[in-house]
Image 1: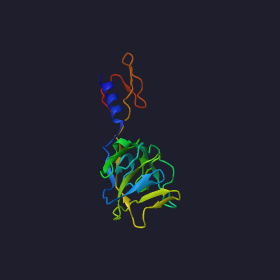
Image 2: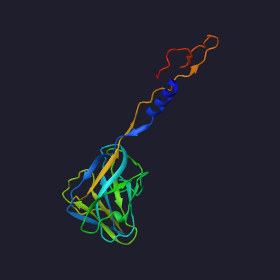
Image 3: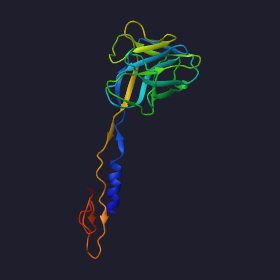
Image 4: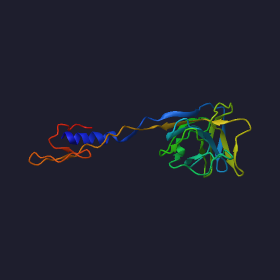
Length: 217
């Protein structure tokens, strides 16, 4: 029974665990908004301060007349033009149900969850909001240039471009899970039985059956 408990304890200690998600990057001021519709995507770039799993992003949004879910994606920023690369990172997709958006004039913070995409500190990414069908919504922003680790971007027929000449930042928060793996002890010893009180030579972690050392390593 003691050996069985030792094996169970070792297995539990080897399971990867993580803290609750923590706020990493944010810009929570508003004062205007950008319109998102079928001919205009909006994005906010951000640079993580934590390496880990991006669990969720909060966005300050309101509906205008959108009728279908909004597919949110996370893309790295390519280094040449500093625009989204066009390639979504693994696990970097989420959905905003249109029913969760409040009517125009009543912006609300909306949580968008992701399938644990891995992001790296000091590498720039973008959260992108498109609308594939008719209708539009509003993503609130601020023009005081208070967020220095990213910027708001828009996409139209000509491609991506910064919103206004001055620095504008959309209202957002990112929450990251920092992975933690507990120490994994060596496996329990294999007990080699003795025969007529003659025990085999102990090799490579093997111990005779009448050894008094039967505790966990």
